[in-house]
Image (cartoon, rainbow, N blue to C red):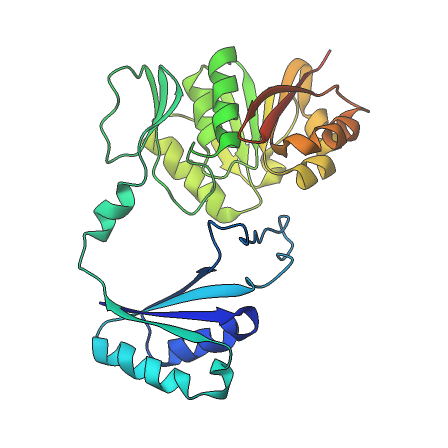
Length: 294
């Protein structure tokens, strides 16, 4: 396999991608050419909204071809096109054959939530010190335990225990929080998400971990719960404030994540009419906010 590497400005990305596709590239990836430098640019948008820019000011494009002749021909053809202006050919090089499955799997090691609670991919052995384990592989839905927000939610679950609780996981993603709740004693668990893929992922992951829960779209959530978990992002959490607070039973807990440290005050104000939020954990610039209903 051979890769063709180009450096190009933001304005040429779409045209070059289409051209490489027409030239039978097996895949085309685009990344910030200034990554890991002071000129690196982050491209993030709020859920449901596009990022502020379509691409980086300087992008590195990598196209994979099955044969060197294909990569060389693509390089020759592209360089004589009008739309190649401002672009640079970095070169064509051979990629050594590898066991890509093993290489990918090696990037996902077991994740320690507490010394006794671990998230372990199915291809790994369970650590000897683990007393509670969630088996979970990376998939289409968000939530493998590696992100600080997921980690803090699971740590909260492990430290509080949910024996006999009715639990709502709102925005369940992979279902990891719902499964964690089941592992720590929750009896009735509803996991909901607006994404059908997340609902399917949650059901499959629950079955793989031998736990019982209900997974579905948001309308599945009905009534009050002793624990309400929501690991989303600040903007949707603010919009959902009245709904989530309504679902918290008297004496119950609300646990919110997906919040940056600088967003603490705006979340506190958004929930003030119903509950008094406070920061209960922090990790790598993210915070966990919780409240208890009187």
